[in-house]
Length: 262
Image 1 (cartoon, rainbow, N blue to C red):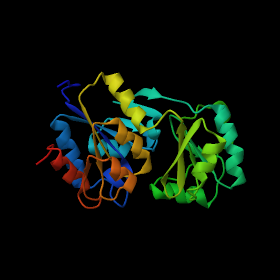
Image 2: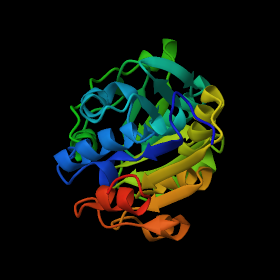
Image 3: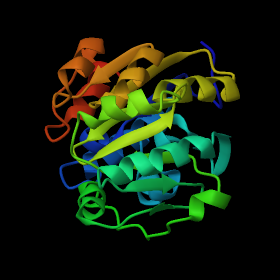
């Protein structure tokens, strides 16, 4: 089997509802298991809608050094950016007035952090969901700054179809109860997997672990997808294996199933 730095498989992990517990933290058993599978030849990546700058603590605890962040728009490995994409400014300018009509703030992400173009209770609710600090209000920063990912902060799922119809060059999917993730139409966690494989020249087995809508493309891009017991039905439908819930030793049970730990 092909190896990359002595690793025989790649594993990609969603965070909320997958690696993390109900408090948005890594349980010690998960930390220990992640270190063990690395010793056993598995090279792990986080695969998340979060920005890479939000992952320092999780990466330090887990020993994971790579991340397909911003739903595939920004990828890092060993502290280096190995791939990134910008959201076209013309698309951002189309989105802003549409969102304002519905009083829905936009969160904008770049290589260092995120900010919002409007401040209200929807901002506080959305970032509290992932235990993240409320971002600053910077109305015009996008005009002269590269933006790599967007969120529309709303709890209305039907807004996904509305925005898709208005801005078809972007991809909209609701991954949390309080926000819509936005990437370029051709970019997602699954394309992130392909970029990682290309950069590493890796041809071995690939695995993914997830629970939400932004994991559907991820599951389609790997050889062996694992759904958490708490995953959405459509995610479970794509899974080769369904483990227990993230709050019921789901990661450990999955690792045991794949023979990575005893």
